[in-house]
Length: 333
Ligand SMILES: [Zn+2]
Image (cartoon, rainbow, N blue to C red):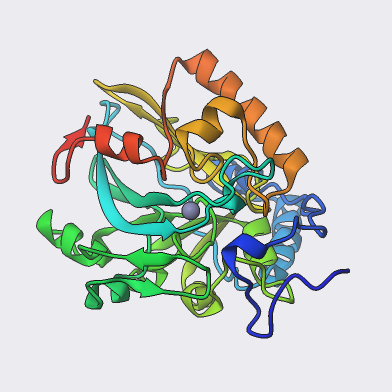
């Protein structure tokens, strides 16, 4: 296989060749099914044996060391209050954004992408969707130029924004990760007591050798000691259908998007990095580093879900979409 990485394990953002090793995940463990077995049925020895085997497989998948039980949804029977806050978790700027399409639309052109995180209140529980760029970058007002080939700036830390809502990181029950790239995984270390929701395939792929582009192993190392629910299919976070992680591989092996049903604002489809810009969304552009076939299949799925749910699409990195959300601490409900 051709060498895709420099001696540090990373290459400049613009110089990434198409990934050649992107076989679909071989993992067949259906975690959701296992979980419904745990919470829904009395354990018989067959189920227990099945579970033990599945857990053994999962534990091999690089750092996945625990599964949290699915919460009992909505025990009172009343509809939970759901709010969605959009947090500013940094800015990524590229002088040459060629990597964001493999058909040349961005060649030689600059691109600035906001990197939001989304905080979702579901009754008494909180889910953070993605963790943004590292809060450590905030110490450098002009940002940092990093090994991933761009300039990264954090004006306001994630911790400070949580504090504005009088929340500590330990108040965040779940941290869902669209994928493990540095601009989504930057603050994993901030949440040692939270349960992380991430695709098993994503964790496995991130630990491949050589280290894949966009992965900072130090950033994701805390997952090895954290509570992790390794999801392998779609995942219903609160068990009541209001917030679901959707399987949309292609940008990375275990990539996920998020669908959120808000009581007043309707249904939101939050892309993760299935799309990076409005142009990519409208024209179906595929970044160089993606698995092209997987990405197109995920885009097709996403489009059908959008049509069927009449959802509002939020492209996480699109400046227009970030600007259109209520400015924190305002929220959608
Ligand atoms: Zn990203």
